[in-house]
Length: 104
Image (cartoon, rainbow, N blue to C red; front, side):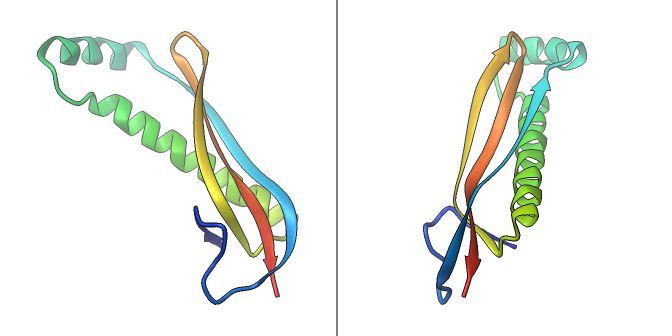
């Protein structure tokens, strides 16, 4: 499946728009990461545990979006975007969405 942030795919003609494909996940911090992050906050630098947590969440949201597009019978997902929002203190949602399309 082609997944792109552009509106079109080179050398492909979109025959049909199938609708929005989307996938999301909600992730929460844990006490172990929070303690280490607190120490990092004092000395500075990247908080690698949170970076890894966010990367895993993005990948899961993208995988779920692709599954949604396959369910719709799509050949590709164009105009893909990612969004995040805080659901509650210490937990955030990552949302991946785009337009599921069928090629000629």
